[in-house]
Image 1 (cartoon, rainbow, N blue to C red):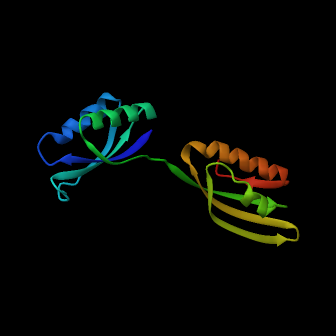
Image 2 (cartoon, one colour):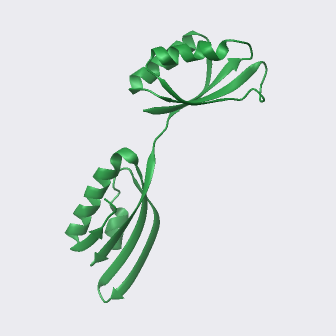
Image 3 (cartoon, helix red, strand yellow):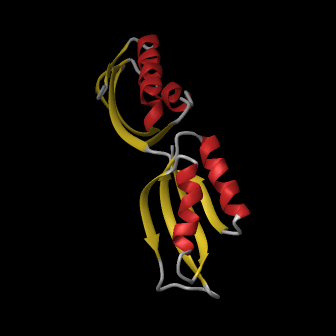
Length: 156
């Protein structure tokens, strides 16, 4: 699980190393570090990190250890990977049902429909979905298309 952290470190030697130790001890693997020495504020330097932890608990352990060391945490949040996919539905498609389906983890970011034949619709739908939810979203769209007797063309 990737987490984005921004720490306020005292602008003196050894502070970055001091902050990285509890992260490593909690199982954190540093993906990137941006040490913004050109933006000091009141003796502190912002340091932005992306860290991969084995679990949320490991992340919480690192945060608690940093706080116990007196390291100020400006920001901490999980990085959620998203994927964009395009689907095509053909047939007697009820557009309202698709839009209102509220498939968990799916956000429609583009939508185009045409009616090449009477009572038949072709829909191109661009969606954004969390990377770990792709399979579930595809299955839900397959279910909806089957209920509507439509053909689903998916990237997966």
